[in-house]
Amino acid sequence: MSRIFNFSAGPSTLPLPVLERVRDEMVEYQGSGLSLIEASHRGPEYSKVHETAGVLMRELLGLPANYKVLFLQGGATLQFGMIPLNLLGGGKPCDFTVTGTWAKKALADAKKIGKPRVIYDGAAESFMTLPDPATLKVDPAAVYLHLTSNETIGGVQWQGWPDAGAVPIVCDMSSDFLSRSFPVEKFGLIYAGAQKNLGPAGMAVVIIRDDLLEKCSDDLPAYLSYKVHAAEDSLYNTPPVFPIWVSALVLEHVKAHGGLAGAEKLATRRSQMLYDMIAKHAGFYRCPVAAHCRSKMNVVWRLPSEELEGQFIKEAKAAGMSGLKGHRSVGGCRASIYNAMPVEGVQALTDFMDVFARAHG
Ligand SMILES: *Cc1c(COP(=O)(O)O)cnc(C)c1O
Image 1: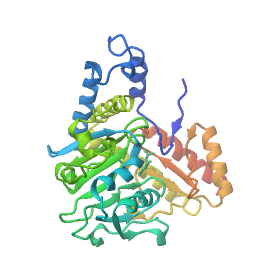
Image 2: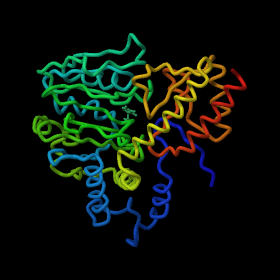
Image 3: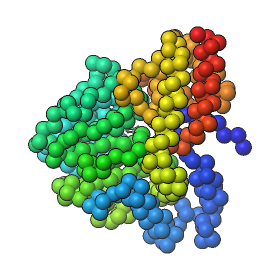
Image 4: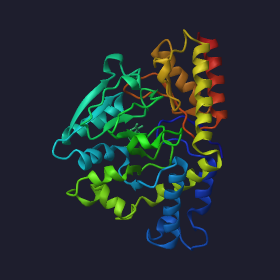
């Protein structure tokens, strides 16, 4: 077996011990005579996995009792629509920060249902910076304030949280979920697509506070209703059993490695290694993101020409490092260094960057 270092933005690298365990248990799950993905989602084997995923999620995030954890299909993208459908029906107002590609997508869907007001728009700075959270003026009448904690494509990440007063924060944490701790009580709803830091694609986690849940619409088709999913503990219909199973194993893995504090420490170390290497060859490598909001999950940088960028990506691939091409909308290079990326992977990449800069700088 020869596994490369996979710097892809998503789906992305998963912890090797988790993959190995899934392999070992895939065909016959723990002496049950069948695979877990063939078993009833109401049977004893799956029920235990489902419960474990929820319990570990609560434990790792330190969720108070007044939050529900939901495991839903449709990825984070369905949440762009589901959140306004549940909370903004009839054209209710909310406040939005537009910080990059993903926030723009969330805003586009919110506009179809509610009346979002943009209180920060990073377009003029090409989304390469974030505002000081203390400068955001939140409308007290807003149903919520929407944030994107980490812009996966632009490589900007909020380092602090605004004080929204009594207005709950709704946050897309898809690409930095489980990589750092945060003050849960500021948030009314947190959502994350699984395939960056949690597990396989095909699922989103939604964490919703009871007071917000009570405000949700009663008139939605069943699958679109948070109330329906919360009342049935994400078992209203067949849940995404495979992503939930793998996610439960990932959560166990995160717990065994120091929880969110452990993950945060490693994220700081990995990202610092990359930003230091970019700084070491300033003039050759250049990070376009403002220093105060550089992401610890998605590190972006440019080379002096697109031609050199192409060569860098190609030679890195040949050296066993894939997924380093920046998103097609912005170009350049990007290393996605989620929880499961070993420090050795980043070491290999920074060594390669050093040699490449010396050869071409
Ligand atoms: C990947 C990503 C999404 C989209 O997730 P899907 O599961 O593909 O719908 C949304 N927001 C952010 C911040 C992302 O990184």
